[in-house]
Image 1 (cartoon, one colour):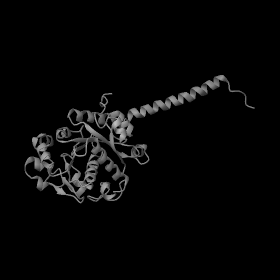
Image 2: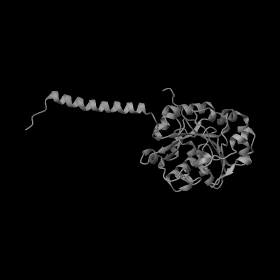
Image 3: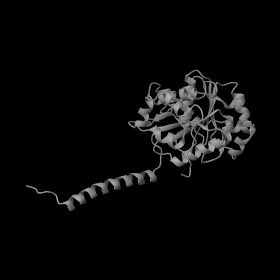
Image 4: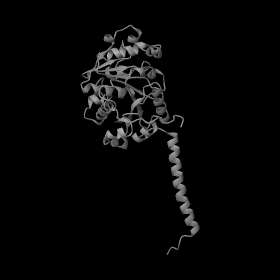
Length: 311
């Protein structure tokens, strides 16, 4: 039979096991350092100090996108689906954060391009309209407009650029959509000086005027770290949502964007975690969370200070 294992051999086996574990932990830390993207609700809330107001599942695109009712507007084309439900959750949570009628003008932005801000702003606006609110979606991304392409497969003109330059009126620029109660103010022609246009007092005056005609206004803006445009718009809005794309948005970029918005006196009211993969606990955990936990985290009042972006 086999004799006892020599103590020297046993020592090597134990060292090998612990060495392997240590190497695995080191690799995990290294991968996390190389890819510091935010993947889960807990990661987002701990890193940014801001509550997640919706967790939107990743959509696998198939077939052509039909203007106004295609894959990019699941809140319209698939009202019983999980994505539409996520946007209804966003609508309900933002309404609860500071009273139903206090927040009427929403700014939707992201830290960097490609995080899904137009997808989010369009579906969120459609969801508000479905509740019976007369809703206006403004495409204030004057550099890379895409709202009217999503709804009409075309970059409509005139739009916001022409209104701010004084060459078109709001009534000429605003168009109805196939979604009842939902209207769009497209970006219009590409302006040579977007920041200068948005910095003028006309934008704030225009929003104040539009508040008399619309119950809710959703503004889709450029990414915060790309240009200063969203920070110029911030003073004209009641609430701001930052889009974070699960597994893609760099942690430091999201934290930096939140810091800049806070410095512009429009702190982010909530984060939308976008493109969460099916099966990821981030979506399912969210579905069972109660709104009560938000109060405990201070989302209804003062939120925790954002983490140091340099950390």
